[in-house]
Image (cartoon, rainbow over the protein chains, first blue to last red):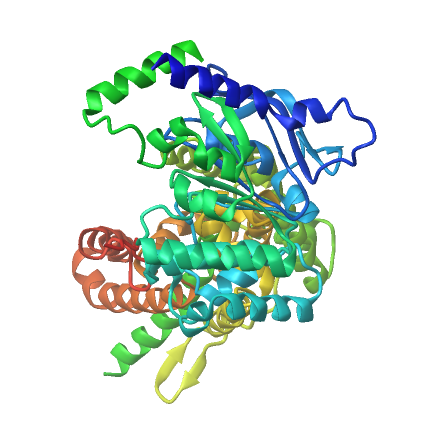
Length: 293
Length: 293
């Protein structure tokens, strides 16, 4: 067991937060998104994330993995600015967009810069039709003709939405709602798409389909993606780089291939590994590991 | 038979004017999910302002009405800006109490400042009735009904435009609206401003019917029963509900009042609220809570 722990440590050190070390190298251009040492406190008492740093380079798909309550959604909301309604606050650290500090910007202002978040649980406008959902999300776009082009583009990526464009969005299936939520985020012509658990509650076939489309959007539109997932396997298949969060901190990060090969990640997040069968053992082992880390 | 037709037609016209009062409630509810219990006070304040601008300051009829609409729009906007925005995230009951408190303040303050005695609304509508065959119709009601239909139609058109769709999106899900770049606060403030302006126009009509004094604010009860029956967020529902409430009220009080000595008019509205909430809580056309399985 100690052997595995040591390896995990090594992995952690090897790929420790390129964002932090990158700050020292003056010649490097600023990445699209750089989160530096961000701490978020809810309700002035609950410390949800404790000094998270991560980077999303232009054009990349980056995965943010971790179990329930690790602080992934909070990290996304710190980036998109949506902590306010939940009485959360960034108390330390900075969020930078192409080098510009946006930590205190309002959410609509961030959307206009090019950051669009797809919320966990889809959150489509239930009483509007899919088409109206898309039009409502076009508010930051001034030009009416451009809005029509964007709606058409979304329909091209998600033909299913076109078929159901006049139904109430609340009655769409879970997969269709997820497509609508992603399509809606595309209406503001984002440069960075923040996806919060797009696989939640969907059949594996659908998850695959949606991830394929996300990949196409990434390649064809040049939209970078920060993908929050519990489904680590699906996420690491499409992402080029990954961060693993645990207990409000980034525990480990590295290229997707390296993370996939890491025995700990295999055991805890990919469901493979050393053949430990009893959950109690796993739990005990995990807790021990957290203390040591 | 003539008596019944007369009651029904006059009742229907009055009902349309109720619908206009209720449309102010619907407008705010549609954007922010808040039931504005100060709408009666808004209508009364609007009527007082029209009277004050025309009779005291000597403005012409149309400039007076426009000035009152602008002032009431500002009052609505300020209400959102100064009071409701601080209440975001608070329990619904607190927001309801806030708007009701505003109603009480308006009821006391406006007559206190401008005079509590009943004043005639200074608009030139002939008191001579209109005859439709044997049926006697109140001229003011005809004007009121017509204005109500036009205003509600204009609002319905507005809700199909991009700004209107965005407003409906805001009412569905504040956080999601924020996430796609809709300036939620500004949208909600706009709905309050429009609702205030509508209240001023409504105040002119009702002031012409029953004179300008504090009792105009009692329209709140009628408007609430119409809005609840119509479904709180549906303009077509409000028109239909207005017709229903108006006709029932008029017919029932016409036949029953001689036996009980009057007052049934007020009972009808209360019974409507009561029965709607028991039998069809989301009203005739109100959106049901969509539950997908």
